[in-house]
Length: 280
Length: 179
Image (cartoon, rainbow over all chains, first blue to last red; front, side, top):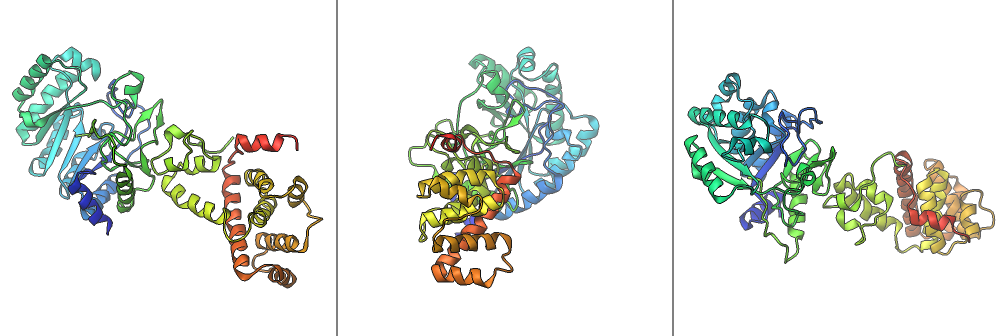
């Protein structure tokens, strides 16, 4: 059976994700307390070249992946990101994760074409209380996010709000939902994500401990190789974790896909998928 | 010290994990190759098949491996296969001799050593008398196999020497233990 046929079978069976993830870079203008990749200003950038991202999208589409995920680091620190996102979205629908703090008038203008493409911008917002949100993320982050979201919505770009962690009480979560609704983000575009005990979350004692049996396989390409999931290419103490590395080889994308399928198929009966950790 | 990181069990990539023992131990060669799991997955089965148990007896293969490793000056392979050669039945004097100038060898072992020396040094110009003595004592399949053993060993010698792969602690302990 061809790799493409095997992939389709695995996607239909729900054993692997239909989404191919691309890590654009590892640096960030924020330093969030739970960041998997210890992203911050000044860290090693580990940039995945724009041309290679487009190649990955082409090959991913050919293999039968049905969508893309673009994450980092903060993808919009890469100066070419709006145009590259457009190129990627012309190939496959995509979700791009962002902290929404870099959306200047100039950047928003360059993002305008994304409104006509299958692009969703996933923006982190961890609390309806500015102080709580900013404690997790960065000073003044709340203010920047609640300013950026309506502007994107107004442009016709789909926005999804991602709340990381389980710190919100039901009442706090209600207030957060009221907030995102008021910003123009419907309920179906709000997700609450778990934290994995990796990266900086390991140092801050946050998140669930999980190995590859609890993390849904979503092939993730980075500058350092192909990983099991977007939760996998983590950094701790400045060192890249390799325990969830699939292959160093990224291209052709068929190669790491083949290895991921073999590993996913090797999970024995009784594997515990209860955490069912997915990135978005 | 190795020139590259030896990957510990808790950081072993998914494809490399099966090559680590339940207690997390793995050879230094395995731990280096784990940096590139897809190549570990190709290399170790090849190496284990060629250098492991096959039709040719283990003692003869260890003579080839140790001799080629010593000639190539590979500390990792020489030390590791000195111990492996003891386990395959060679004496301490015999392994020491294979790392220097072999003296007291029977005709078959001498033919194997001469063939190993020629494959290592001048594979494009192996002397006819060496070929003749090899053919006298080894069947054609044995000659093919031992040549592959010598060539694979040379590849590992270059790899382990260039990356300064360190000898494992158990091997070091065996080497330093009294005879």
